[in-house]
Length: 209
Image (cartoon, rainbow, N blue to C red):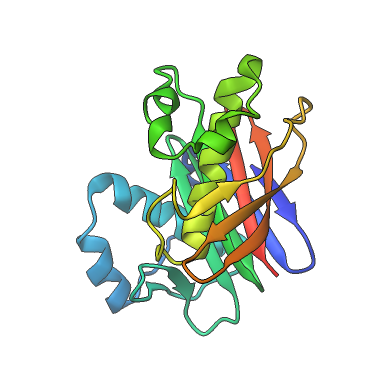
């Protein structure tokens, strides 16, 4: 399990099997959570329980609910939460600030190339190093997905509403920052995204300080 901790934010990345085998204390759901839980698919039920186990692992036992924008929040906590799933890994961020997080697996079927027209702007494609194109695409996708979550899903177009400034990949794959933008009708807002490669996944997160 990977753990990133600062004074205001904690991010954990884990495999579901890790918690399943190492943290077996049952999770008790409230009546409201049970109503939400039974509406989920089997895949989503597994992910939901994984998130609850992970939160309990870091000492948070409060209920999770969603606001009208489908943004998760922790009941009775002055904390913001964001989470993401990709195959066997789950990433969770808990912060005193608004936060968006994404984790994506570098898939063998190279799906990211098939969908790049949906999220890659022309002014972003020009700074991509062709030797690391797949890595660039995953990072850019992760940034825009994190911005989307940070904004509560209000701006849906990854081409029109989100922009990533030019950057060079740190080939040591340590946590690096990238400037990025949410583009609104009346103004634009700048953020800084951080990324890290964990095994065959890319983790990206953005904190709105």
